Image (cartoon, rainbow, N blue to C red; front, side, top):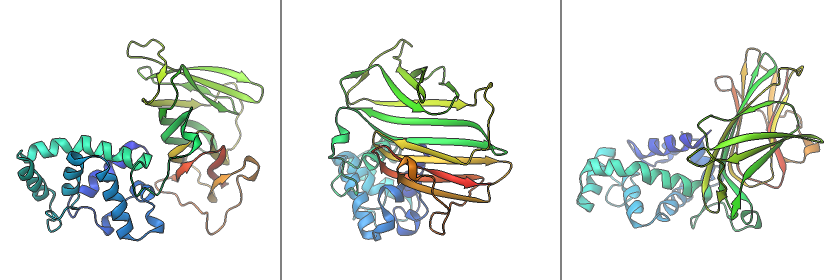
Amino acid sequence: MSPDDLQEELQFLRKNDGFTPSRVDRTDVVRLLLDVTSEGFERTRGRFVSAIDSLGDSDGSLLRDIFRLSDETTSLGALADRRRIHADRIGRSAATVADREGPALARLARALVTGRYAQSPLSLDVPEMHGGLVYEWTSTLIVIEERMWKETREHYRFMAEFDEMDFLTITRSYPAVVSTPTTGAFRVNTREASQGFNDHFWSRGGSGADSPMMRGETYDLKFKLEPSPDEAGSPMVNAYRAFHERSLLASIQVEFRGEVPSAIWRYERVSHFAQPGVPTSTNEVRLERGIASLRLRDVHGGLASGIAWRW
């Protein structure tokens, strides 16, 4: 899961019949963000409209129309017709309306993730939001090939809640080779600790030189971990993340290449000593194209969530 998944779902929901129960049911991230599992469609629709309205009159009017949520478009089952309605209202062309949709959808995606709108199922008014950082979302993909760990790909988007900070530290308990994209916004400096390793990710400016992170700015951190060539591996049976800073939307995925486990299950928000638990009828995870997925909303406090399996 990544921001692209949410953007793709929002683009899907604006097409054809627009924001309807059957089309919402075909989304994953939107359903998670709107807490669809515990509410009826009218509450879901109300939350979605509330997020749209939080963006202001210009974006709000545009998005209500293209999602078929305004009085003028509720009978229109084609996106092109809804664009023409909005174009007539603002005195511009339908092509201009289409051009404005992308930026408006990006702003809507951020409102949904952060929950900063009146009917949001998530409240952000908590101490964790001050003096540290907030992950808008985190995405972790772990690749297992013939029982052995092959690589991990991480992508974190976060907002700084401090005045200045030179680097972000992520701790791990196992040896690995860590790399960042050569054109990325961070470089990595790894230091061994008494019980593992600290990966310090230094922020870089446009010139490539180190540049402190600033309050209120959003940053994308991408990196990859691979097994150390001098370390003997063993079959892997558990993958988890413990979120000490708040993550508003988190995805953990495990891709199995070759042999597939006999049982796969998930666990959420448990202490380090309570994981990985045992498989039951309620926590079973099914593979989709060889990938086991766990999506989480608003995780923090250092509790562990992950996917475990048995060979």
